Amino acid sequence: MSTLAPTLQAFFTDRLMHQRQASSHTLSSYRDTMKLLVRFAAERRKVQPVQLEISDLDSALISAFLDHREHDYGNSVRTRNTRLTAIRSLFRYAALRHPEHAEIIQRVLAIPPKRFERRLVSFLTDAEVDALLSAPDRTTWVGRRDHTLIATAVQTGLRASELIGLRTSDVHLGVGPHISCLGKGRKQRITPLTTPVVALLRNWLSEPRTQGRELVFTTRSGGMLSRDALEHRLAGCVAKAINRCPSLRGKRITLHVLRHTAAMRLLRAGIDLSIIALWLGHEQMETTQIYLHADLALKEKALARTTPVNTCPGRYRPSDRLLAFLEAL
Image 1 (tube, one colour):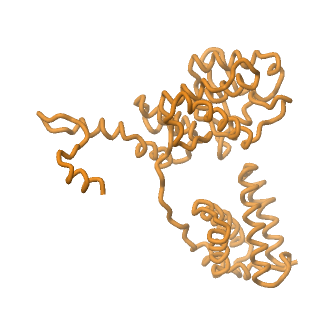
Image 2: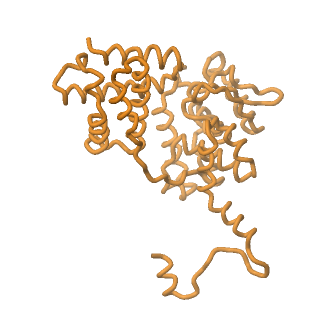
Image 3: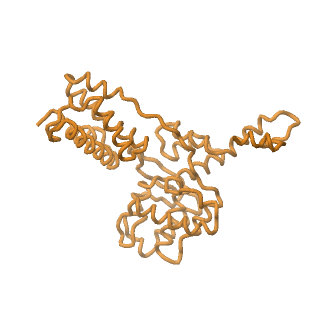
């Protein structure tokens, strides 16, 4: 057996599982990257995967692997950078165990992430939220579940994984109603609940088919919902809501868009970014600042405050059609 195989095994069992106590999502993401990398390297080096050495995974091969996944398999730049993050984590661990390969390891660690354009976050307006909440058929158990789930997601900003794993013991509807959850990075956080959502959750948890279950939102048989199932149910609600609110037609709405919507509602209510970061469970403030760029109304309000005296605030409108044409280029 080569030096790579035991190092790779120890990386998962010792570093990720024992030392970092990584989540199942991190483990599966890193596992998939390593499987693809090992297969690619074995094919390039003409050896069996178990015979690969650390020296076989030099910076040239790693770069070729990343380009291969991006160009031949259509991986996005974000996915490419995620795979590079996993590879870097492995090589930082290998540097402690195999200093004899320090030169190769440092060259791999020096591979920079690829830059990409950051798109503005998408979020729903109040009218679109109302239309989405009206879509589920609340005469059925599934419809009431979907209605309560969407309302909870829009108000709390919980991630899809947090909604799926939400337990009845995490929901506190007494004095100071809130939801307690273990989020990304194993960070425990508490999210307060509004009165309407408290009423919805109280009614939902008192349903005969819901009582006694460990999870708040389950399948009909009481099993855990999958992310694909959640996105499928949400897509069905969006399709129904389009008839009531046509502006939904041009938007790609996912559970993460509901999380963005919760953040934008807080921002428009004048809540400080640091509080929003705590609300959403963000590790860094820079992550929360993307919402400042997304809201044109906030920028217009800021512009109105700086308007010179005796002028009327508002957007610029060219008075001439030729100027309007040039402005639109």
